[in-house]
Length: 225
Image (cartoon, rainbow, N blue to C red):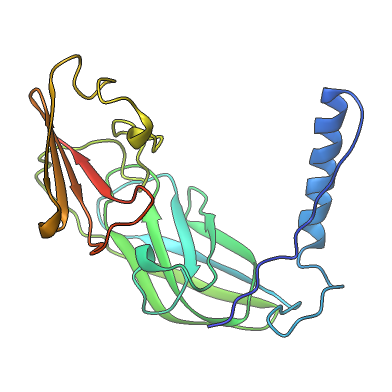
């Protein structure tokens, strides 16, 4: 699959800090209006784009203020997408959404709650985007609801804010920083089984990964218990 990244825009201005920031905001707003650029010609860069709109109609006795609505690769798990293009926006409190400047193509539509009690994810396939406007109408969704909540860390928004070291810098911290609280840090490795287990005091750090060979970068899914 061929993919084009760009064109890119660089803007350098002069003046006081406040004036530069204000001027840059004006320029950024203008560039958003001008996108996609009509002067750029490439077979992988369609200058005609589509406005995709619709409404997520949530059924059942559940509540949420807004959803993230995303157009991505068709029939591909959202977390595994990287080669194609993705377009997304947020709904208003009524579930209405508008995604502008979408490339004409075939997509799947995904939606998930940004807060509240909905942990399920909507997937609607066979979205054919073309023309100036595409109104998907009302998209009915009855998310799976679980009656008994065992425990919850953070919010149901697909973000890591509720987790320890959510800034992603756990691998940069000293071994005695936060993890062990001054206790002896012990480490056991089971690399031949595809996981790394670390213990510190009464805390367990478990790194699970499907990578079969060791990479030069820190790459793992971490669960703190």
